[in-house]
Image (cartoon, rainbow, N blue to C red; front, side, top):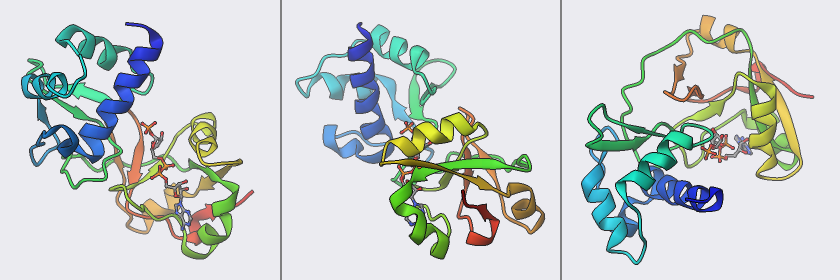
Amino acid sequence: MTQKEQIKTSKFLSLVLRHRPDTIGLTLDKNGWADTKELLEKVNSNDLSLTFDELKTVVENNDKKRFLFSADFSKIRANQGHSIEVDLELKEKVPPEKLFHGTAEKNLLSIQEKGLIKGQRQHVHLSSEKETAYQVGKRYGKPIVLTINTGEMHRQGQKFFQSQNGVWLVDRVLPTFITFP
Ligand code: HQG
């Protein structure tokens, strides 16, 4: 598989495992798992072609480790980023003192007013690395990195979770906890 084919497949998997499983007639269980065999059958009956080995390559090589197989490979799910309601059974975790959120400059006024809200997704996403946040922000326009006072949020009772692939997840961030550039 070429790099390009892997990226294309990863994008398609993000669509069906995070947002729209119905596009190929797939259903996810309440914890977000798809049956691997069923996923492959449905993908291949939709004018696309994907073998188990190719799927494994995409999961293993994925730059952000977006997907996870169950131990016996019978199930697969996305590690985070869902817009459909799934229970990833994440355990609460104490965050570091500071985390980062990358956004586009055009969102700043609204964020100053309302804080960070989750929009379509199940959580607001925060990164432990400034550079990662910068790359996330770049997707929507001129990137801006916000520093979040996560230590204080946690001391005031906010719950934090971390996905299997290291993304910090939180319900919302009030403007008082955000340092603007
Ligand atoms: C912005 C990628 C105006 C927020 C990344 C963001 C991430 C507001 C956008 C994951 C706002 C939502 C998620 C407010 C938040 N007013 N704009 N009050 N509050 N926003 O895509 O965090 O590559 O749903 O700043 O790595 O950008 O897909 O969230 O710009 O982990 O695996 O509203 O997606 O992962 O956009 O990205 P998104 P996100 P993958």
